[in-house]
Length: 69
Image 1: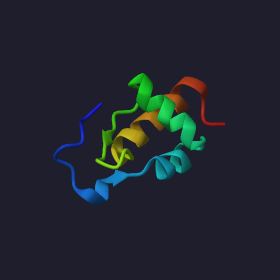
Image 2: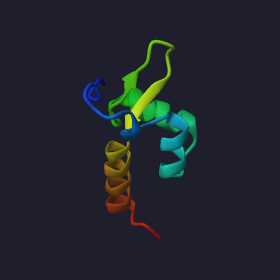
Image 3: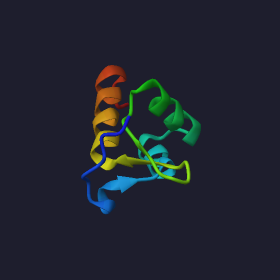
Image 4: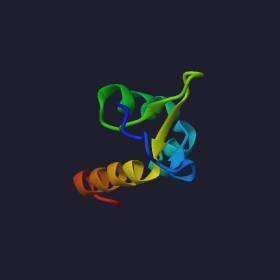
């Protein structure tokens, strides 16, 4: 789950931002993280940060699987 150790802060986004990019609810993003479908780093306060490129990669995979229309 922790693949973001050496990523610039501006490349990391919150679960809310990830949800917005993916067009899903924040709880869905949390589920993707728990399932290992979306790698994330847990901050000391318990929040997650996700690499923007990982979110875009997942979005492409979903679009390929289900189509984008």
